[in-house]
Image (cartoon, rainbow, N blue to C red; front, side, top):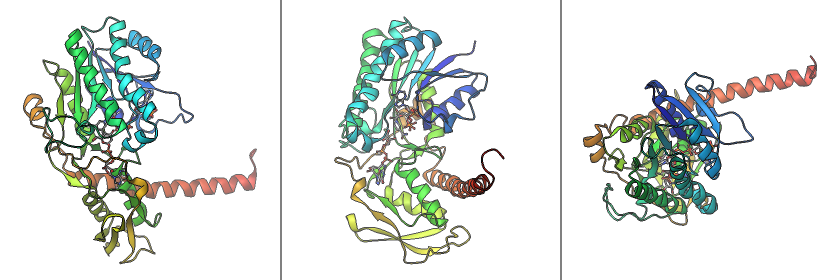
Length: 376
Ligand code: NAP
Ligand code: G4F
């Protein structure tokens, strides 16, 4: 019999890849969407209307909607991915972040218990390396103490502990994947990697002059989201409910990400200055890739803006994925950092060019419309 999965956060980066992964495994996939003034769900548009993929309105801040939906779907597995997932935004909207990212987890657990599914329904919780925050050891593993360092991380800490509590108190199969940063061509455009890959593509095509970033020294363990969703599934197929660190075990700085991204867009950077005065300057141009007419050697294309500094910043994340490797048989090196940056920039070079083409078509249509009127 096909298994049934319920995914919260189905419209997000991970939700979209996980849906594809589970559909390919023969699952019946149900996802939670919330009302928005924009109805186009870009990351899952290609799945909507396909036979085993179903969407339902609910919200992580609305217990009743979750209780009713869990009762209707009767899932074998729940993947709780929904969250206000932007760390910097959590300083601006801390209460909303706590409601969705902390109490939301409790609501899912209680929805399962209310529907008497605690013996049959397994739950995956999207925990995060941000729990290590102001890190107490490097690299970080399942035994490293937590030291959350943002409202987001504090909310996620509650989620982690309530999952553990329900596992022990009610013998439920619920686990956390402690995932380090994972990126892709579907990554939200304000996370640092995607912000960089898009800006590099725009600057190479003459659509943007300069990219403003915050802390260039920050270190991350960046993996590919498509590789990481497999692990979410593996965690729920393990014979015992346990928590796992999911990471590559390789660390790079924001500056290194930017240097490599600009390289793939045809721009070699050199760095000058320090702190707020640091700049990424064009050292050479590969005109086969970077075709912006005005771009020249010596131009400043990356600068630092204090707008992107955080009140407290997590600066040294490096995961130890040994447990996932040995107990789940997962390969942390499927996609390397170099491949990740290359595929993101390649995608965004095409996207920026295509956006231009689409804008041209819109301009032509608009001109035609203005000329001929609405009833042509
Ligand atoms: P994402 O792209 O920001 O997606 C977040 C999802 O949560 C979206 O589908 C969003 O829906 C949904 N959501 C937010 N508030 C909601 C609410 N009140 N009710 C229902 N749905 C709501 O995040 P992601 O990168 O895929 O990450 C997935 C999960 O993993 C998140 O919990 C994140 O905190 C965690 N995580 C991510 C990483 C990473 O590097 N990506 C690492 C560790 C942990 P809308 O589309 O309607 O906004
Ligand atoms: O890309 P980021 O915004 O990701 P961050 O804060 O690490 O959070 C992401 O990964 C977590 C896992 O560790 C997830 F739990 C979370 O949901 C999210 O997916 O920032 C990465 C680093 C930070 O140190 C930030 O200060 O890059 C630094 N940074 C420098 N300039 C910037 C910028 N971050 C952003 N977003 N924008 C900048 O201009």
